[in-house]
Length: 440
Image 1 (cartoon, rainbow, N blue to C red):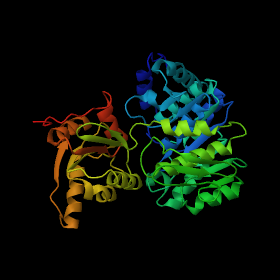
Image 2 (image 1 turned 30 degrees about the vertical axis):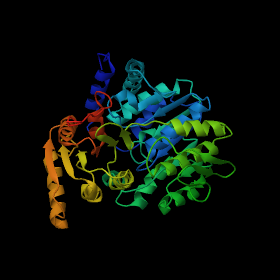
Image 3 (image 1 turned 180 degrees about the vertical axis):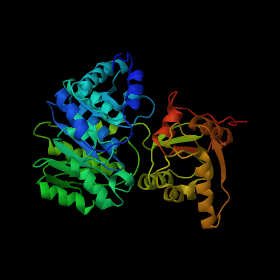
Image 4 (image 1 turned 120 degrees about the vertical axis):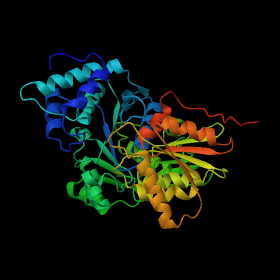
């Protein structure tokens, strides 16, 4: 390449043009460029795989480690609004211009000698890993993009692997059932090193792989567990216990399972990263992650959730149910075409009164009209138990405006289905809703 792009934006455009496939599983190409970059970490690395709960687990480990005084680095994907969100150092999103020299270094390594073709995800992952490796971290926390075994993050050997819930998603890449998908996730384990499995009912393939390679297996319900009542909860691991903990700041029923896995990972590494009980308390109480059952106060109430597969939509439905009574629930929904949409719509359908289906700014998305057709087909099968209004919108922002227009102050609006859907309404910051007919 003759001209060097000057900005992060132009580098991202360059990465999009480089490789024929958006997703191209395999470690040979990315591993070769990592070798040319001499990419290595001088601190413990925690790699987190799973269908749902990865981002929350990473955020909880980060928050507790920061409270213990450690310099943390987190890599996660996708982003909600800006690409730079994919990397946080000490809890702060990195600046766009701080990433540029690392894109340049990856490009130099990629084109020296035999040129190596990298996908967008591989190129950007290497750039962020290089930045993190040079940031004098005490702990690096890596969220797997897709699967595990062949994901670009797996070029780094994890000192501790974490596998969160395993469910059906990305079947075209990972396999048709939980056992096949579990095998892919298990690829982040390393011989003799801890692997924390926080899925309460993990696929047998995950357990078998840990035993085959001689990983140190930490199983939920065996090596660590939690208990709790409405006021507080407690965690117990192999040799440590924490009692009287406040609930994590991330809301929702499944967050205790994620928190339990995060604490097990920290216990597994305690010889290198000692953590105090106080750090656990404060870290979990202060953890933040946008778009994970995020409730924005206002009139109407706004709920943002990146739930985008049947398992996470089931969790969202349970969480919405637990919020109590709202006269009307409006749903802004946009999703990728490759998702298992019928079970998602069927699960949450009974608690939605009005749908605002939206197009999304990516060729992978299902159109608003196709989403409406899928919903109508479900209603036909169900015998149309109750009339539910639907409308079509060109963007999540437009759909949200329409929902606010139609809503009463006591209603709630839930925005979900994809990172693009939630990211669309967060573009200009977190919306604070004020229904127009308040006091009218």
